[in-house]
Length: 445
Image (cartoon, rainbow, N blue to C red; front, side):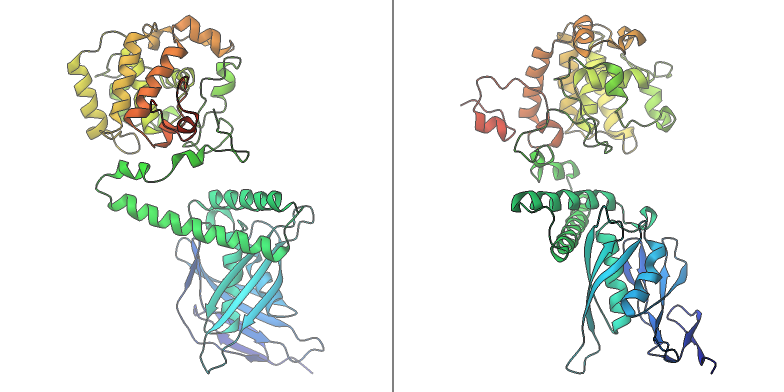
C-alpha cells in the first residue's frame, strides 16, 4: 500500500511534505537564540510503517534575516529535532534526554527541558536548554537550540557576540566545580545545567552592562563599577603578573617580571591590529611621516616594543601611558604640545582610539616618567637587533629603570583606582599592608 502523503505549509510559508497527519500548522512569533530565531515547528508522524517515524520542519531565521526550514526525521520527536538542527551545530550531537511538561488546565503552553550531548566519546560535553511554547514540537526545538547556544555547539557565525567567551567561562566553571567536589566528571544533568545557568547569567549580565555603558553619563566610570581584580585572579588564589597567552586583546599584558624573555617572544604573542587598520588621523599625529607629527612619533612595530618594555597592556589607560612615556623621552614636549595632544586624543580621535579625559591622567604620568627616567629619544633608540636579546638587557641599555617605573605605576594606581589596567600594574609593594596589596590598593598604614 502506498504511503499517504500530505502537503502542508509551515510557519515560514514553506511547502513541506509529511506522512500521514500534521499535528498543527498555525503560525506564531520567532523565538531568538543567539543570532538566529526559530519559528513554530510543524510535526508529522508516519503512521503507515511498522516503525513510526517523526518528521519535523523548523523554520529558522538566519543572521541576515532569510528564513529557511530545517527538516529532520527520527524515531521520535527528540531524534527528529536533533536531525533537523544538526546543520546549525559545529560538532555532531544527540539529544540525550527530553522532558516535556504538558498543560493540565486546558492551557496551550508546553515546557520542555532538553539535555544535549556531543557525540565525541573523548569529550562528552553536556548542556541543557529550556523553552516554553504553544506546542510540544516547538518547545523541544527551541530548548534544543538554546542548549546548543549555551554549550558553544552552534556554528561561530550563529553565536551571539561574546558567545565564545561565555563558552570558555562555562568550561572553567564546570572544571572548577569538578575539582571542588573531587569528582572526575559531573553527572550529565548537572554539567548541562551548570553550562546553561552560566550562559544565561553571563549573557544577562553582559546585556545589562552594555545598556549601562551606553546610557551612563560617565562611560569611563563603568570601568570602576566592578572588581577588576577578578580578571587577574588564578584558581589557586594567586594573582597574574602577566598574561600573554590570551587571544583577548583586553586581557593581554606582559608585566615587568620577564627579564629573561626576548622582545621577539613576547611580541609574537601580542594580538595587535595591522598598521593598515590605524585611522588616518592617528597616523597624522603619531606616525614619523605624519604631517602634524608630535615629538616621539613612532612606527607601529616600535610602538608595540615600547608596550612590552614598559610591561603595559592594550587598554586605553595603558595606551595613554605608553604614548606619554615615548613623548616624554624626547625631553622636548612643551606644555602647548601636551595640551594640544590631550585635546586631539580625547576629542578628535575616533573610537576605539579615543582616550577619555579621565584616562589622560595616565598620559600625564607617562610623560613625566619619560622625562625623568634615563631613556632618551625612545622612538629612535629601538633597533631590530634588540628583538632577540633578553628584555632585562634591553631595558638597561635604553635607560628604563624598572624600580623607578614601578613607583610611577604606584602613583597611577592611586590616581586611577579599581580599573583593570591599574589592578595589573607592576609595582613595588614594599612597606605596604599585605591585605591592601592583595586587594589592589596601595594605601600607607
